[in-house]
Every structure is written in structure tokens, then in C-alpha cells.
Image 1 (spheres, rainbow, N blue to C red):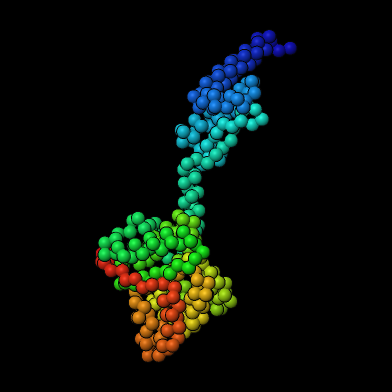
Image 2: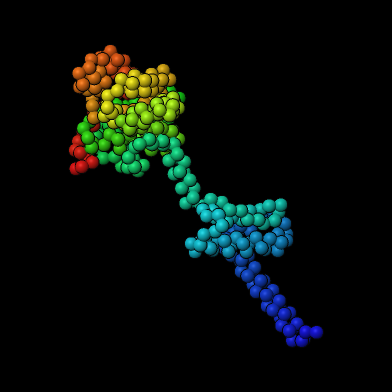
Length: 306
């Protein structure tokens, strides 16, 4: 038989444990946030709800204090919240303001598909676009995004941004894409010279049509640096031509950027620079470009190397 003093010590420990538990529960119930909840929910709670839900109240206060102290909870990004359930008090976890903002940002980012585009466009925004010598381009971009968001199923003539290296043509396309994303409009940006190389490689693995369909059916398509690719009749007629034909028929918004004016692009597509003269085929492509977009020159200093 164990000594009586050992049994007494156990009883005393249980008593102390009980007293500590009661003190913790009383402190939790007296918490200002808990009291605010109890007052607001008094009509919905059973008379003994506080007693029967004491553990939930304590969990709420403990989790909230851990969150405020910067200690992550089991579900990061969520905060505890007291609720009424079957006339008793329960706890649920709801997204924090930070998580909601992060989720919204992720949703917006998912609306922008970037193919071989520079990383800088991720942070491109119209409100950060320097309008010096570029006010007309900025205004046209804003008008375009507003119009598309207002009537996403209507045809909206896009922009053909032309100008020398470094004046911000690609950045403006990225800013337009990000602005459209804030308005829940998806877009696809493609660096066309790189895409042309990939399409030639796709012939070998027979993925030309899937790659082409992905691009031509984009809700809003932006072809960056068109005219900088190596001239290829196949790329001109069976890639670019098919993309533009589809988008013209379906009246899908399309934008371009190029170091060449439309007139210079016509000569490039005709092969004038390499001694060819396929003017009719070039004109056929350019008819679709002109249907889809209006030419807009961007001037100013070289912001890339200036």
C-alpha cells in the first residue's frame, strides 16, 4: 500500500490543476473580444453556453494571441473567429486580410500568361508609366483596358506600338495586361521572335497545332517585338497568318509591339530586305494587322539603357 502522503500529494496536485484551469478559463471569458462577442450574440446563445463552450473560448484567445505574437498557427494565413453553433459557442478560422490580399494578387497573376517575356513586366503598371513623351500611348492604353473590361465580348481595336529600342513598348504591353487582370480579363503576352523559333522546333515533336491554338484563342493577345524574327515564309503564312486570320474572324482584341512601323513591317514580310518580292502575301498579313490594331508611335529617350 502506497504511503498516504503520496496519495495526498496527488490530490493536492489535481486541486491545484483545477484551480489553475478555472483561472485560465475565467481570464479567457473576461477577454474584451470574447465579451464583445457574448454581448452581440446573447439572444442566440443557450443560458449555459459559456460554461459548456469554455474550451472553445480558451482556444480562441490562445490562437489569437499566438497570431498577434507572430507565431504561425496550424493553418497559416487564417485567424480564429468565434461563432454561434447550435446555441453554443464554436470557433472557426477565416482568412486574414493579408491572405485575402495575397490570394487576390495570385488570382490576378493567373490571368496573365507570359510566354518568353522579360520578368520586368510582372511589376508593370499603368499608374507607374512615365507619360513624358508618351502621353498619347498611355491614354490609348487606358482607354483600351477600360473599354475591354466594360464590354469584354465586344470587338475592341488594339494597339500597334511602334518605336525605337528602349522607349517602353514591351513595358506598356505588360502594364496593359496587368491592368486587365485587375478587371478580371485574361491576356496572353508572347515574345514573337522566340515563339517563332519554338514553332519551328515543334514541327519535330508534332505540337504545332496545340501551341498555335493556345495562342490564337487567347481572350486578349499581345505579340511583342513582331518583325524582329528571322523571316520565314512558313512562320509568316502558317503561323502568324493563321493567328491573325482567326483573331480577325472571331474579333478578338490583339496588340502588337515592334521596332518597325507598319510600312516597314510590310516590306519585311514581303522579303524586300533579302531580295524577295512577296508583296501580296505581306499585304494579306498587314490587312489583318490593320483590322486588329491601330498604329501608335512611342517616342522619348531610351529608358532601357539611358
